[in-house]
Length: 419
Image (tube, rainbow, N blue to C red; front, side):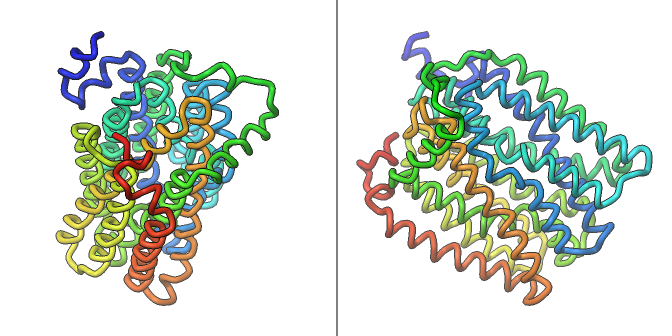
């Protein structure tokens, strides 16, 4: 295919000229649908069965219990192939969903069992996004990577829109058992489509399968990040948004729906879908104009805007205005997180790609910490005070990152701002 032919196609459609991407896109879409349906179904189940916001935040935190071993998954992806690791992970999702489906149909579902299975799932799930992104980077040339990452991100964003609404509707109308049939089928379909991706890793050197000890190679990735200002800035931004922003727009939305807006599962589904709609529009925007963006600048500016919009969201009493604010917040989230991932993948190159993304996934550990702290603070000082504190702290720390790593983030000629 000629360069002219590639460039003449719309940026949103260009990635689909690659066979692996055509297989990966529906695989990621189905997996994301399963994840979003499952998170909403079980989050509502825990809150209604126990009535405890602390247990809700504990359940949400357990989904990230494997964050500390994310670099091991990154190293496994570099060594054994990102497609192979994804297949193993998605087989695990399908098996665990099948167990919950059986418990639901037999009347044996209990909050304790849900917590235990969520903990097992959480060992694997935090690394799914990193493996997806590394697999996209294996497939796409650098000049198309930003657009491809934006298009690929729509699988998760659209799943939060439709998967959350579908999950809420299925539970409300049919119950947890039939809803979990749909979740299990989504995971099974995602596994099948992932298996169709070519196992070859274009652009990944054979040296990633060298003789270095496994853990030594993981530490090599950590050391690589520690000595590079651009990567350090990106990792800190990722950690802080997981610590202070994502708890409000993910794990705590069931609490907002039930205790602040006094609505049901369908109302919760619309809140989740509102944030995801904005994120999906942001991903599509990046897919269309990604080559024009300055990744490092966008990462920092839009992260700060995201905190500001959440601060507005937690002050408004009306669900309608809250949903509109969540749409714009979701847009800002995509305009920050997709450039961040693209910047890290480009900078790392094929040799360290899996390891750097594994280290980036360590930043997700901020999310369970933020959720658990919120679970303690909300009964003490209230939801609005807790969320406002999170947002103000986040804005201050974004400014600090901008000052600390200004040379790596802000100049147009900086590596992180190369198009």
